[in-house]
Image (cartoon, rainbow, N blue to C red):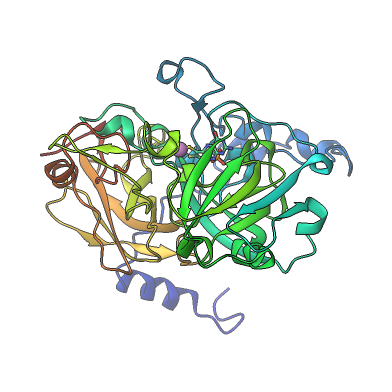
Length: 419
Ligand SMILES: Nc1nc2c(c(=O)[nH]1)N[C@H]1C(S)=C(S)[C@@H](COP(=O)(O)O)O[C@H]1N2
Ligand SMILES: [Mo]
């Protein structure tokens, strides 16, 4: 090909290597004994399905293993339970709608949007009730945010337990929401001067309720009806959910039916008996809203063994922070002794997942893989030891400690802790 289109291929290759790029992946010599090359494949011989064979598209049958999964022994019933996003199989920063983890306290409410209402009441000038149609006539916004359950990594507090990034870190998803700013809706009703808090209430059988300070409510909260360009999925709160960027998942009330304005927090079930953190001194932290800076290597990981042996290896992971953007991610191959700066690729949006990579030439030896994220407020993801020194061993929620995968010479990995 040479200089066909003004590009000197050899010079490009040398430049790549000189810049410290990983060596090129070994490839088989073209065609040598490979039936995938030498034989005419079935899909070349016959016509395929026509258009409309799948009016709503689904992934290839060869991707059937990329699904949400639960851990049966975690909960007594599936209606009050959780399943996990297969983060180890995904790339980029957007979670496909059908793979967003689910957390329900009383199952999925199946709601006809024609029968759904959003009530605004309490300390307002004019109590209001909106239909879905009313809401869709208000100016709307599109925003990409992560949602993390406060209990994500909660099973890992006292030591490594679950073998896979899906289970240790999969209570997170990141989608683009379309919705009306809560500020706009509250503005329609008029907040009284004494209004300092809002209570968000769900229409499901758990009637999920959480108190939110008014500053947050009028800052960046959205009343969303779309995710990734289509209507919310029933699992995610169809037809309406509250989006509370950067704050713990349980505040993102699904099947949202009411916002009450009040002068004090309500001290509801989900902010007293649950979603509090027992500290070493016997006191419990409450209203721990922000999801702290966190990251995890998604591949390689226990569910994503290295199948190709030594040589070029793409290490890939996710980082996020409820404070804003991720400014830096470091990766360690030796359990935190040495750190290398990873490459963040794709959009860097506040309170959204960030995708990072470290492209290495693997020598085939054991690795103790770790990632450590830093956010734009300067917060650094702590080690599990540092976290326990402050928070003790009795917490469940808000575990943002550094995760370690022990990668073995055979390419398999295991969830471990180093100290
Ligand atoms: N109405 C209602 N809203 C809810 C819940 C619920 O059970 N009912 N679960 C909460 C919790 S604990 C979390 S982590 C998120 C999970 O959102 P997802 O199912 O879209 O992942 O929804 C929150 N909103
Ligand atoms: Mo949650």
